[in-house]
Image (cartoon, rainbow, N blue to C red):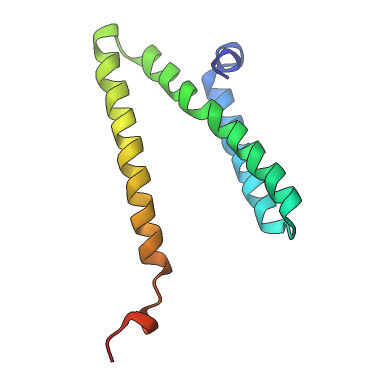
Length: 103
């Protein structure tokens, strides 16, 4: 995927991925059986696979050689931390206050 990003430019590539994500997410709301869901999920995974390497490519072009390692480490750290935080937020959103409130 990084080869494609280098050929057409990261700006165009990341924009296209983001628009395609939106279209696929709309498609998730329109499916009623599992077969199209599997296809949409595979397409979403394919697009997600191109996002991370392109971000690393961008970081390596923005910073000098000595700054790049630190910036990539911060990028990995934030990605992991926010992934863990996403589960906690999802749990908080899904709690039914009426069922968990003391009587």
